[in-house]
Image 1: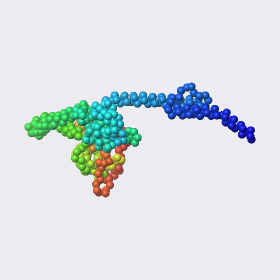
Image 2: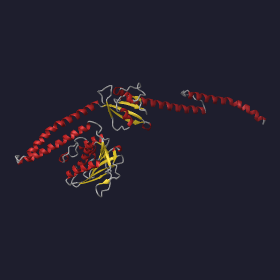
Image 3: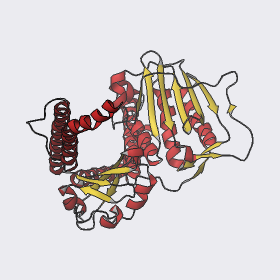
Image 4: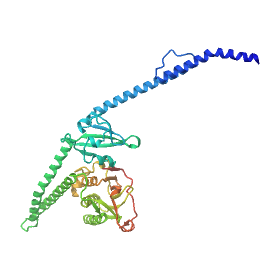
Length: 435
């Protein structure tokens, strides 16, 4: 026992140098890591050497990753600075976090001088603060900066980041496009006004000649053709004037609850007169569902869709009109079982004067402006047009309105189908295109 007790101090004394070296290596490693020193060879032998080498490898990986991030950030900053559009990043409070040099030219926003300021304070525009707070960025905001009244900017906002709380604002100079559109719109409006009066005079003289007993019989057929073409030109002029009026403002005026079922009744009466009994016209209406909007504009849009279905489908076709509540809001749908539309034509249907079959469209009296009018009316009501069609199966045109535009009557009656024995249906699953 005594021998054992005598050996313990000797063993402790013998281990002191080894323990001291281990403690010194640990303290040295701790100091190097704390001071963020780079671990370089030579490394200690044994287990500590493995520890030093492992930490050195992690340090090397970290340095490479930081260099890669710095290069990526530099390239991203250089690319953003070279973009001709104004780029502004806003934080959760709509305050400026960063902006590229183009923002100084277009929006008079200088970074970092304006860092932390609210965007509406730097770029003063009456509707900017409301536009940012509303959160609906489907449409760009067109604004003229106060520092340069000759510019017209289109501001688009894209939410990003955690929970989409940050905002990327893109300001694009659309001055040339804006002025070109103004020139085109003014030209169309002025030309249409100037054409209206001579066409009225020509139509009056042609009607007098056609009704006169002194007109030779051989001249009557040319006069009838001239009357038909004059009437067609008058329709084109009226549609162009309608488009010009719709393009004057992005929002519909004189908003009020529109009795859509009553309007549809009148439209279908015109459709039956145009069809002359050649089509099966059915309707399914929610009599208690009204719509906030401009009554004249909505009547024009709905009438164009219904009359198009009558004009462009053969005898015996079924045309069905549906008005009711959809998944996302009120929907007006015109469905037919006509020849259908090929997929390549659908994206261009709302273009002005675009026709799938030019000869057939002219024979039916179409101007090529109906769907363009429909698109503009729906845009002014924050709605959209969905077109689904397949050759041989028919077509479905659906106007989707926002849920906030729906108005219910006080009556408790539910949806009523005005066609006996016709069950409610949804538009078929056909290839669709939205405008």
